Image (cartoon, rainbow, N blue to C red; front, side, top):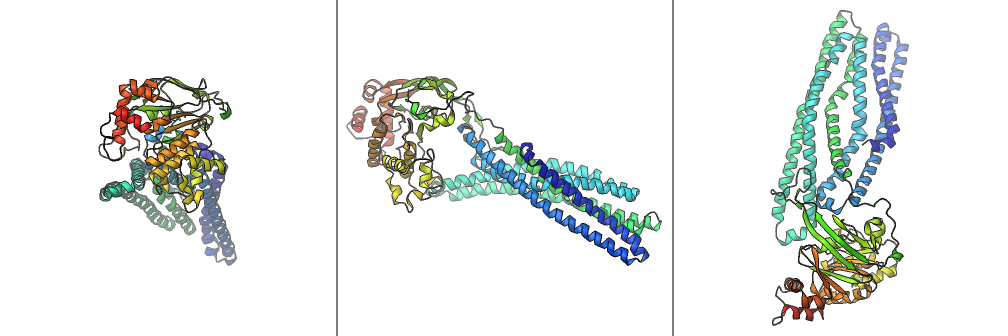
Length: 611
């Protein structure tokens, strides 16, 4: 955490100095009491009594003022550091590749950005300051006790031995429990987030009891771990209290004996006991501070698991800015191969892994040497069986992922030679799963083009047949629910399509963006898209045969390679594998679950559908 503390180092130096000064003033009061008892009280001098009493009161008032200042400044400073760390964490998450997010549970990321940061803030505003101040206070007071009456002072000093032993044992056990509890909080947060997002599915299948049972299991596990932590703390902190009380009783008895033997004055005994009372808070708070330190340490470890992850898709050294006006849209795949690092290994018990990361096993190569030329202004459809890698191929163009071998060029230059921001600014992308955010319709539409004009927004809405937005309560200013669940699937998909075509990007990548539309709306959207695609290089990932009608050429992806490229009619006549893919798509995509129109072979039916 050094780099976050460094800008505020003088704040903390000042806070610690204030703490030392306050401790010094507090230590002066018992010495003044000693002077009062051994001087004015013993000799009956009222004038001296009032003077020393007033001085003690002044010391107390100054100490209280410094305590207020110290706590206020420490809280404000810690809040600023927390805000900066949270901002850095979020920005870093945005830079990490999609594969990183695929491997992490959302609840684990959420708990790190909320509860873990709160633990670090509590340490920075409280634990760090008092860890230093209480340690120095214990050493200084013990030294002063030895100075006042060394036999009893040494007895008090020996209390550090059992304190160190108890603290060491407590620290080791509490550290393990703290990590387990914070991971379990992430598991619970994940389940809550997934249940909220999938509430319609849960209700539709009547599985609320099952999900409640699953939640109860994880919540009980979290509760049991919290109980274990509380039990450990409850068994440890009284031991600290026992040590201080034992030392205090020893001082009272030993001090009384010393006074009776004239080895110590009455004022000296009162000062000794009063100073020793100053050790009660540093010792009794030791357990709490150790717990705070361990929780903050665990939280920092969990946060730096993310911050230490290196973004794999970054700008090359020397990458240049791609100017939209210079883009012609010629795209070429040259020997492109791609293998997902590992295949997800599901947890057989249905729970999260201890560190919140989904385990993977074995690389899976999806693309095995793709060679493909897409000409400027051409619309190319990518067709293939389910799982053939169509979406993977499309995701390579805006560098959502990078090929493991080969390269992709834009206008003859490797796309990795362009900066990420400028490359993605010329590409419009619509995913099969339409993702919307909990913000207004306008903000969702202009996510990639915040400076879009009202006319551009209107045209994009018209192309996507998303005219329903004008009927919403506040039009474009209407705030849609989280993930757009307040809209139908077709409405979400049309808004996502409008977002993709907004600004007429030079390159358009559409991953089956019409799957949730009815036949009539799909026809209208395709007609509007045909006008938009004129002059734009477009790649269509096709899951339904009707979308092929928008394409100038079709590429068949099979076994990780481009098996054939040509017009729809040519492939339909010459490629049995192409006919099989389209036939399967027609069979699986029919609304009534049937196999199309009776009496027609697949090829004839496809021609009729596309006509």
